[in-house]
Image 1 (cartoon, rainbow, N blue to C red):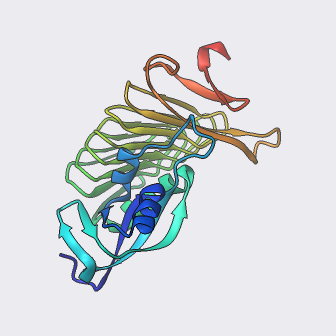
Image 2: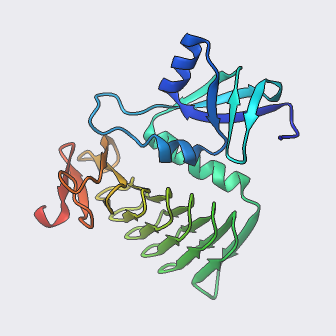
Length: 251
């Protein structure tokens, strides 16, 4: 069990509120990525899914495993929407991961094979690749590629015209640069936060995209959708236009 007296847990806000109202025990995740995997962002509802960060006194843990707890006391300390939760997942993963490999000057490729590790490339046209579970692959240069191959991992790129690809189960691919692209497989989530961003995923994934106003700075729409192969097709690249997902080839 955790050595500190207080711990932080994560759950869908709706589940937290139900447990509070019924004065019932609550199942709490240790990893915010697990909440996103099991309770993906809603696309059909008027209000998207909200996620709660919880304070827990370890004396109130009734049962615990490697990934979760059952608690009879908890306190909400923060609530995030899908966009903020994705950013929170990335920041928490960076904070908690122990092994860091950063590739800077003369080479453009960074690869880490171990779990809970970070591969980072800062060069233009760089490539970063993480192979381990709970790992991060990130690129900050333009025209770069970030790839994460294992479960509960994150691929992130912030450069212009870059590509983030997540292959492992329940992972997250995020791109924030202009005309960048994100793709997810294996029930993951792909999110393109940048202007003119593009997203795609296989069946069972969730895709998300931001749409900007005429000034190119203000975000006017953010939407998530489930890749059901009916309304949203797998292997199809989408942009957000007028608040709706439109295949890139139909732009």
